[in-house]
Image (tube, rainbow, N blue to C red; front, side, top):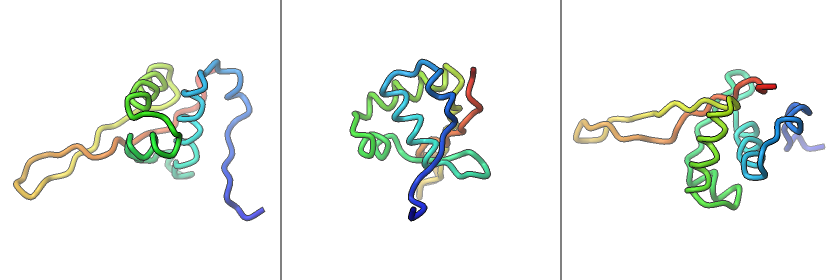
Length: 98
C-alpha cells in the first residue's frame, strides 16, 4: 500500500446516514487532521470532490451537524478595507453519536 487511504469506524454503517450524508462525512473524515479532528474545505471543494451540488453540501453538512456527527465553526478574515469576510467553515469531526 502506498499510504493513500484513511480509516473510519465500522459503526458508521449502523448510523442510518443517507448516501449523501455518508459521502460528505467520509470526505470530511478523510480531510481531517488526525490530531485535532478538524478540517476546513470549502463547500465548493466538497461539492467538486464528492460530485454533488454546493446546495446539497450545505443541506448535508447542516444535517450532519444536527445529528451530532460534526460541528461547524464559521471562520472570518479581515479584508484590505478592514471588513470581515467569511472564509471556509472549520469542521470538527465528533465521536459517532450511537
